[in-house]
Amino acid sequence: MMNEDPLDILVKNSCFEFSDSFIVYSSGKVGQYYVHSENITRDGYNYSNMLYNLKGLVEKSGVKYDIITGGESRDWVFSLPVAALTLSPHAMIRKNGSVIGAKIENSKVMYIAI
Image (tube, rainbow, N blue to C red; front, side, top):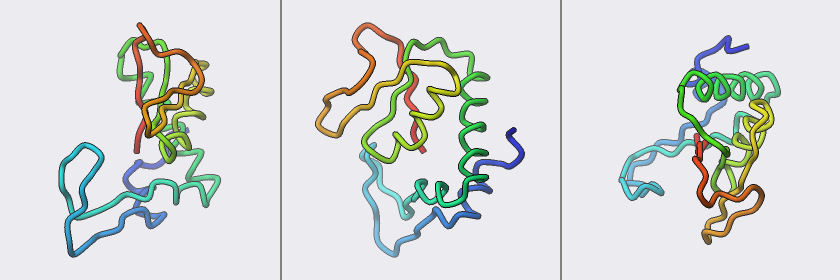
C-alpha cells in the first residue's frame, strides 16, 4: 500500500507541535517539537497507510525479532496493528516497566514508536 511518505502523512494530519521553549523527550534529549502521532488515527486512509509503511519498514529492515512491542500508550496505536499485519506476537510495555502480552524475556524485540 505504501503510497505516501510517512513524514507527509504526519504533516498532513497536524502531528507536529512546535514550542518556544524546550521539550525533554523520553530519550532524555531536548528538542523544540513534539509529535502527536495519534492524530493520524483521525483519518482511516492515512492511518492505514502509516501502518503499511511501518510494516514495510519492519520487513525491509532485515532485523530478526521474536516479538513486536510498543510503549504505553501512544505507541500501542501503531505497534499492535503492525504486529497483527506481520503475524507477530505483541507485548505492551507500560510506563512502570511491567509488560502485558507476550513474554519478552530472552526474546529479540522490535520496538515500534512514532
